[in-house]
Image (cartoon, rainbow, N blue to C red; front, side, top):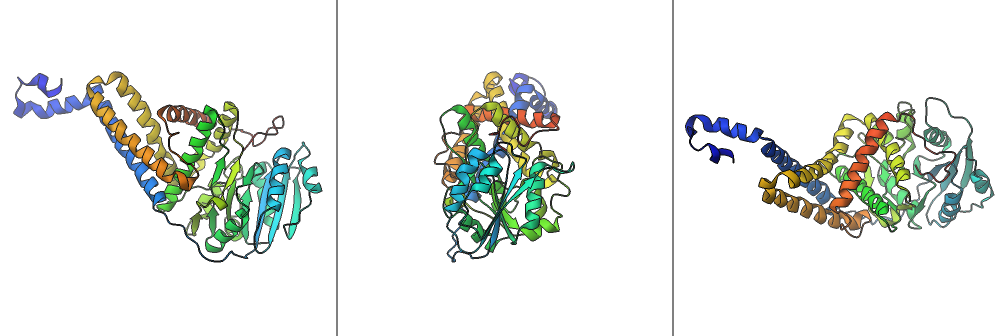
Length: 403
């Protein structure tokens, strides 16, 4: 096959032509694409992973006493608020903290529960109610904006009602971070449960943290987690709030982050004290809908953010080309398996090496089957989001739907 089959022809005149023809043969061309993609994907895992592994985050200064305002928007979250509010009362911190809770038209008794709860840990706690939402802004963003307008302090901290602080120092850790930087981002975990869906959720959580943390540490931050972050109120005001991104259902974190992060100091914390944990979805289509809502804002990303986000697309491309070559590329079987071993060795090394910092004890869940199902689901959710122009934040009939 290849040049050997043409050895009787004039090599001085025709060899370059035959080489070009050889490359254009379907098998050769597919393998060359696979080789390039495998190399780029391996480099992607190495660069992002090594930036996380090598990052040192030691802060020996005393706990900050700078005041902050904690803001939580909720809708039909009675069960989750019954866990969250006692957890907030157990928080240990120095200085003043104002708590603002925003009820977005709940119908399950959430607002009544908040009104009847005894708060002792905060200098001020207020319950705000959203009864009507303007047409040019999503409900959650409207609630956040109204709360930010009346926030007493410059330092703003945010989480969601379905999240719980892992540590009693969670608020203090965010206060400390905002005393050092304009934007502070903590990590968010999901509870580990049996089943393949939870494996997908854990992989999704790991990969998201791996990518946005790695790029940020390499000097190219592009997103934040709305369930666990904080920023200066003045940054929000300078950008006129959600004025240009209000109509999008999501984006109260990543789209806003892309607007306020320019030329400002950003810190991502790997400390366990600064993390939150959430209950994972238990039904595949609930999780699929959640991913669809998250991905629906991707077309509104800045060009730079789109490039950084889509850098992960080499993962599914590698998988699909790998499967194709293993089926039809028998003549390249040894080279294909060599690249598979190289790529997966890097994946395992980096996922295990970064696992402790990102909240994962092992990279063994990064199996080819998990990857394949995850990326098929992810790509399907993305294309579905392009056609669904009206995703919902909270469905009236499903009080436990997560955002």
